Image (tube, rainbow, N blue to C red; front, side, top):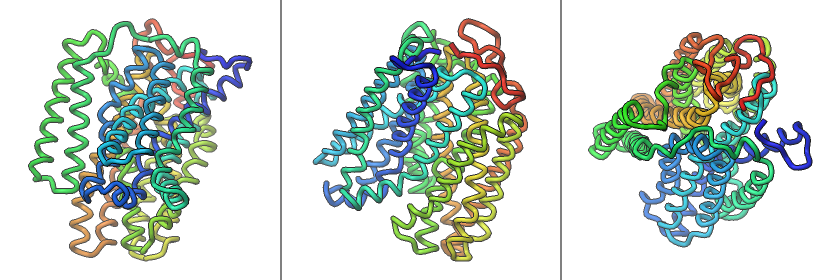
Length: 493
């Protein structure tokens, strides 16, 4: 299986690995948004400028998005355990430095280091999980828990940040990672043994490809964010977007022409399970990764008059329903229905929820404008997240597991950045004509349309995706759990 806990049977070892990767995933996703509520006291305590304090959040997001592709490949090149533990150690150390920071530049640098650690750690969590659990019901259940925990981390960031800041101080939103991280590092050293310590690919890191990917993705993310704040004609945004496109073009040349061990093997994008699956991940991220939380938070503030803590509590229906459906309902449905059917049904349900949100937002009550639509949106998200993850990862050979995980995380992050950049001008235009409610309604109608398109594209996913021609380390059988009948328990090796 690749891992054994000392003195424990396979079942206990699997539970230990699942608890470990879920803890790490929760920390990574939580820190995307946990500092948002703490930004005002951070600005006052460290004497940030009004424009400078945004980099406390932005430095993490940029480093995270920019280094996900090389971060994912590290697990294939140097071993899953080493990549997981190194990313976790860097994330934890940076959290400590940031929590103790007394100068603005120290905090921003620590947040960037956190993002770099997260870019290595996030892909490694999925790589460790898929290598530990064989295809079939066991992996489906593990993916469901991992997905639900990740969604919970994203949904609860503002709430956790508000509670910690109000009860303790802004420093607590960073320092809370330290005991969790130390405990997780100790557990990783004990639990992740055997196959997790072996590299799946010979050779070193594709440095030119890694640099091109980091520059390209960071420049695109920053350019899109700047365009959302300053308009699409802003010279800085245009320059960053042009630099990002150029760097990604260089990446394509390097990966197809010169790299001995490509950062992103081109064959992955030619496989429908990975290529189309990641396109759907990008579209999903454009709706659910950042834009939904961003615009709904402002809608609750501007339309319903909620404060920070009330807004955080207002997201509880999204969190609870998504976790329940993703953890308990989706795995059982995957034993009966094809994965692509569940992805399409989930996207359609989420589309209906966004349409309900758009139509009801002007009603002015939490139950009708937020809580009701939240149930439909969260039901849809919980329904398609685990099947889509299973489809994407099923198409990977063992030596490409880290690259596929990095690509999947990159698609979600890039989708969120692209969606936000495109939707902010739409919200502004709508608000100018009919007030805040009209602007946010226009955004939710657009999200409904994107989810409907996602449902149609999902029907093109392969029924039985496989890893391509068999070779050393290839996943045997090629069946994704839930794509047809649940396959035999096969180890990823």
